[in-house]
Length: 114
Length: 111
Image 1 (cartoon, chains in turn cyan, orange):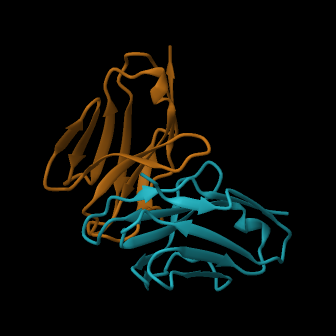
Image 2 (cartoon, rainbow over the protein chains, first blue to last red; image 1 turned 90 degrees about the horizontal axis):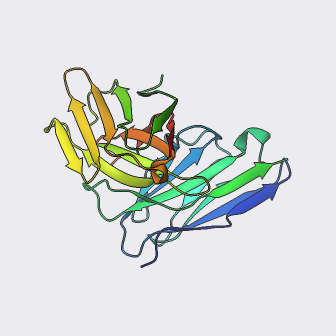
């Protein structure tokens, strides 16, 4: 069966460009999470959706970061006016239902901002 | 404030040995404690998880020990193999919230 799919796998952006990262969760999974993983560090929580509702965006580092999941399935993380410090791997995870916090992760999108 | 502290940062063990990785947490509201394994270029994969109402959980060669009063938990890998060489992360969460991860342990199992 298909796991969590993220695209693109690699993205190179010039400083100041806008980028959009896509996540396709496992079919039927209610919850979707975004994390940022800097080189050699653990993932850090960014934001979380239950269906189309964004329940927690406390981890988004600035107002340049925006996430959406309009139909409760595919999600997009958008970063406006990228900065060098945004360079990281962006991980998406999904879980089947709330109350059962088994999160399945995609392989991530590696963003490099030059 | 780092809410989940993980040690050691790196660990080298001979094949067949028992690597032990330790984590400590601060937020007493956490009630779910998973361990993830990550290989280079891959996303983290869930290994085993525990809730605070039990002190130990075993799945195959992986065991979690949990000490609620000390706010600590650890991962033991029995009969370790070179294929277990990876980065291991402990994590914690309250309910169905996002996970708070430790900084990771880079484990090498020597043949």
